[in-house]
Image (tube, rainbow, N blue to C red; front, side):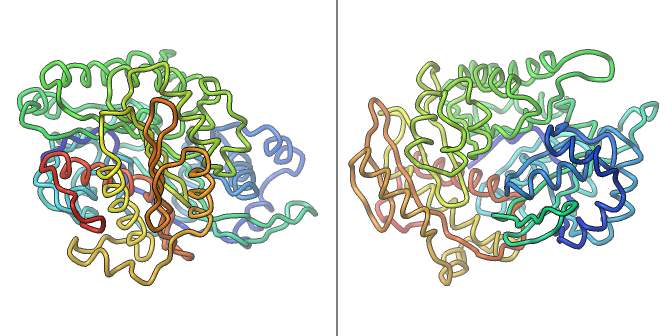
Length: 455
C-alpha cells in the first residue's frame, strides 16, 4: 500500500504527573485566580496559573485536552522543569500515523516533512517513509524559539489524588493534558516538496490519511483567522480527488480550540473526504450538529454516540465515521461503501496495534502482533455497550463484536483490548485509526478477509 500522510508532526515530551507534582504547582499560584480559572477554563496558556488550571480542570474530570502556550516564560519553565524527566517521543497525529503504517507494513508512506526532521527521523521506527520536505525554519524575529515544536504531554492515572485548597480530587480515569508550543503546525504548513510529489504521484496512491486541522488558531499574531490556512489544505485534498476520484481520504479530526471552528471544519471536510475519525470528546464538540446531550457521549454510551454520529453525517456526503473510545471502536458507514466484514477485520487490527503500543510504548513486528496482546482482555464496558447497541440495531454478534443496521447506515462495534496500566495514553487514538485504515486499504485492495482473525 502507498499512502499520503499530512500534515502535523512534532516532538512529544511525555511526563506522568502525580498528585505531589500538582501540590507543588499549587504553591506557585494565587488561590482566587486559580479557582476562577478552574471554574471558567481559559483554554489556552499565558501564565503558570493557566497551566495549573488546565491540569486540575481535566484531571478532576478525567478528560483529555490540548491547550496552546502563548508565553515564552511558561515554555521555558516547562522545559527546565519537565523536559529532562520526560520520555521524548514522536508526536503529532500525522507523525504517529505515518510511523504506525510504515512499521506495520505499508509499502510506502509519503510524509509532509515539517519542523526539525533530523530529530524527528531519529524517533521513527518504521521504514519505507518518503520525507517530502526539509526542515522548515521559523521566523526568528518572532518571540518563539527557532524550530521548537515541543508538546508537553502530561499523562495522569486513574486514582491519582491531590488536594486543591481543601478540596480532595480523585482522578476518575487515565487521560492526558497537552501543553503545546508550536508555530509550525499551527500554520498548517505544507512543504512545496509534499505538494509537488502528491500532485505528480496521486494517481499511484492507494489512500491518504490527514490530520492537523485541530492545530489551527482562531486568531494569529497578524490578526488573520484560520480560514485561509484551512482552505489551502482543503484545496489540496480536493485536487487529489479530482486527479484520482477513487482515492480514499481519511481525516482524523482532533480537538479544536473552539466549538465553532470544529463544526465549520468538520462540515467543510465532510463534503470532500471519505471518512472522518474522532473520539468521544471530539464528538461532544460537534454538539451543534447533533444535539445529543454531552453527558451521554462522555459516558461513552454507544447508543447515544451512534445517534450523534448519524446526525452529523446525515446532512453530508461523508461515507463513514470511525469513533474510537477507551472501551470500544465503532464504524458507522453508508450502505454499499464498505462491508461489515472488512470494517470488523480492519478495526480488530487497529485495536490490537493500540493495545500493543499501550503495553510498551512501541509497536511489535506484525508477525508478533497477536501474541503481544494475547494476555490482555477485552474491555468489559466495551462488551456491555456492544450488547446494548445490539438491542438497538439488531444484527449479528461474534465474540463481543456486533454488526447491524441503523436506518440507511451499517454499524459495527468492537470492544477494545485493555491495558490496565498503559505506558502512555498519547497516540493510542492515532495508532488505532492509522492501523485500521491501513488494514482496510489492504482488504479492499486485495479482497481479502476470509478469516475473522486474519491480520
